[in-house]
Amino acid sequence: LLWTLLNPLLTSLVLWFVFITIFSARLPDGTQFAPYVLAGVLIVTFFTQGFNQAADSIAQGAGVLTKVYVPPQVFAFAGAIANAVNFLFGLVALAFISLITGDGISIEAPLTIFVILCMLMYVTGLGLMVAILYIRYDDTRNIFGILISFMMYLSPIFYPKEILSERMLTIINANPLTSYLDVFRHVFSNTGIATTSDWLFMTISSILFFIVGIRVFSRAWPKTVVML
Image (cartoon, rainbow, N blue to C red; front, side, top):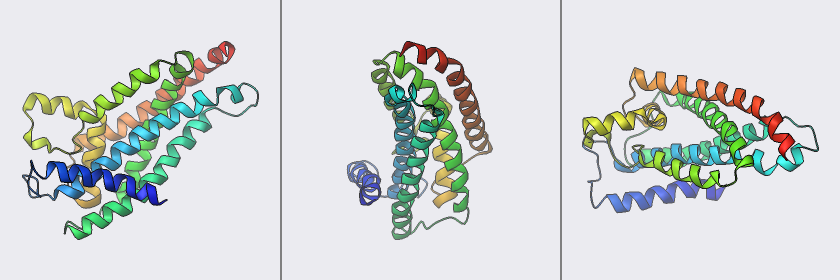
């Protein structure tokens, strides 16, 4: 429990210490840098760890699943939910930072639950799709590790979108994680701006990945079991 709280907090403090020498304590729009970057770290950590556990839980338990009948989707759900709980603990650290920096907590903070539900569907669906590849081709872990890192750098975790060019901003906004970041920052402590497009993109992408992930996994799993 203690490490769950300290991990995102210490990561954010390192980023804050490094980038405080480049940026001022506040972003160009006056937002405090510390709660801004911590919110980004929490969302990205939720995504990366939730995705990895959802995919790996099935791949690592494939041997058991062929002997005992348990719906394999349960393993993916469990991995995603475990990281949702970790994310809730991380909110304690974010709330503390937001309060001591003077930004405070928004009255819309309860909408964070909706962000969590969308992220649960997103990482579960994506994890189910990738789990099949993990089982059949073990090297795909390395490939997806690189892709996940690429998505992280294309997310405004520690830099404001205002400093980006129009072309780069279009690329950043096409990344689903950006909409999660914008909405979460807006509803929790008002350190970001969430447009209607952000809400729609977050909601639609989470539902789409969830449905497609379940369908793809359901069709591919019987063929994969035969190969084990």
